[in-house]
Image (cartoon, rainbow, N blue to C red):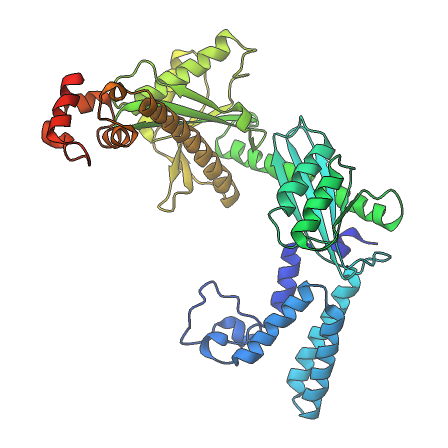
Amino acid sequence: MDLMLILGSAKEMVDFIKQKFKIRQCRNFKSNKRVCLNYHIGRCLGPCVNKVSKEEYRQQIDEIIEFLEGKSVSLIKKLKAEIEQMAKKQEYEKAAYLRDKMLAIENISQKQKVSNINENAIDVIGLAKNNLTACIEVFFVRQSKMIGRENFFFNDLNELEEKEILSEFVKQYYLNNENIPSKIMLSEEIEDKELLEEILTEKSGKKVEIKHPQKGEKLRFVEMAKNNAKVTLENKVNDKYTLLNELKEILKLDHLPKKIECYDISNLSGTNMVAGMCVLKDGVINRKLSRRFKIKTVIGQDDPACMKEVITRRLKHSIENPNGGFGNLPDVIFVDGGITQLRAAKEAIKDCSLNIPVYGMVKNDKHTTRALIDENRNELELSDNLKNLITKFQDTVHDTAIEYHRKLRDEEIKKSQLDSIKGIGEKKKTELLKKFNTIQEIRNAKIDELTQIKGITEKLAEKIKKEL
């Protein structure tokens, strides 16, 4: 049995539906004044300009739902009846369209057929993993037919055994899913099988079994899912190295950028200045290698100076302690924050007598990465796949910095000089710090500025000034 023939990806299924069912494919679902090209080439019924009744269009949608649920037999019967009606009415063009649709559904149903597996609803789950990533493949079998598959990727799970990963996946996937099958077949036996069966049975209202087949057709099918996961994972690895090769060519590097570090500065009016660092290793964002820095030497809001301090500290750490927590030096550094921060990073690298390429990340008005820039503001164009990867990288380091900044602010709120002032509770303290940011700014504020905070009277404002 041909593996790729049986399975078909979600994309292939969508393409099949687009070809055989004349449903609307426009991105803009508002009414139009005229039909588009899809209508003229017979790929759409033109509901946007009322070329089809609601009932006829609804029938198309119902047929798609039946097809996706694996109810091909009943759907084919309906189509046969419709073909006979169209033939009697001598509407041969419609009859020919329905015949083509019926034959296509019969053909794909044969390809989806899973022999010797008669249960109505089964999910078959296979797992493959390498040192960085795990891939889980799920086959959906309904009414003895393969109706689709889906894969999931997880990073930083190399310390877990396969059965532990499968157990966690089953919990997370099915406890948040209304469509629970009657049987789940896994490539490994899991320890908490009975408990999960009980929970899923109660949630779905029907008996749910979790099996680890040992022989026969079901074992072959589980192995097929596992092999598919392996192929999918290998393809993803190849895709990652394709992107790294592409980046190597764009940046004109001598070798693959296997380790890229990204930095972002976060502060609010020069307070609680921090930085985040994230690492892209072998094409994957490795969150375990992320680091947070509290700025030590910069006073006031000076992001370029902060960037220089942070990168200097990080590079010196690896120079002085090669086997430390930061590991080896990066092949490339990306910075978020503009040309001045990029140049500050280059100064830090030069001061450490190193030669590491540095690039800035430029976002568009939709907050996704538009390009990389060098120190001369030259923009380096990126493919869509590279843009997506670097956007995710940029968002991750930004979130790392912001979260640390918020953490420090929360700690400041909890451990404030305001706590010792009678009449200032958590609510007033929070509002004061939200408006003035720091104790110093509260100390410098005028009485009438303090009384703008709800609950702070002139008398309490004078007391705050005196205490501080």
